[in-house]
Image (cartoon, rainbow, N blue to C red; front, side, top):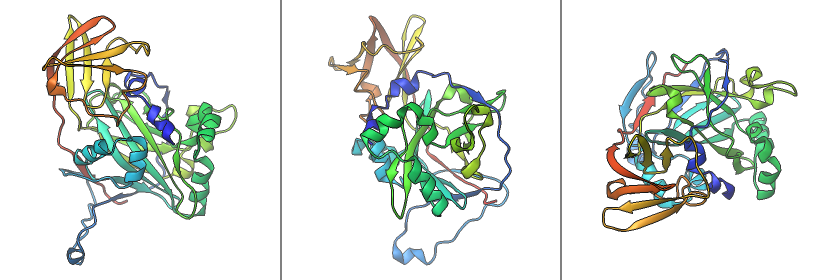
Length: 330
């Protein structure tokens, strides 16, 4: 679904004030799998499996993208996907007997985290669920976009110190994928980091929109077919962010997008980037600032002009090392 190219960083990064929902009960043990790259045949016989039985262990490791075609559907620049693969940990997988959910990629800078995920049917019930909710054509997208949330697992996390669960932004994209013997769908989910209150890892639970009926709301959501599908999502940054200032106001440029402290964006305004070599670049907010279109070279940015104000480059917050978490298998 190429409409996902219209998923602008601006709309996601502007700090949408999501509704909050009550914590759902955790009633079923979960199965979590950490995928690893295939090793050469001569080494395959000596690979051992490490079972972690009591605690989660986090280690710095370069990962890979499990369902690359799905990630490239969302981020349409192959060079960007290549760079993304270098900056993340191993894919995270959680499953039950019906469905398998794989977090294929994570984009995380100072202000926002966004992930792409693949959902696969493991039995007839799971495949039927995905097939029912897939959006394959532009006509499907136009027909269904008014009720986009109904076609995705609803992702929530519980944050220490927060009164209610935080839910992820998902409404900007519908589930994309393929029907057939190996039915699968892919989607994105993300959240402003301010809502995560400094957490370095968040535990994500999946709720089923099919579990509620007419007249019911977010508080009535249940796990449904996603019973047991939950996982730890690392929040550490893997893309740098440049802070620019104009008096007491701030503007931020990460390697993947823009942020401001104005509380929103004006689509009829452009951002003009002034580089240290004297050149400049005008970015059309309505078309040119989508995740996956390009990487901004922060070290070369001298200032940014937006709505008549010039913001001067101050400092760059560097990305942290990619991480992968080995989870206990319950």
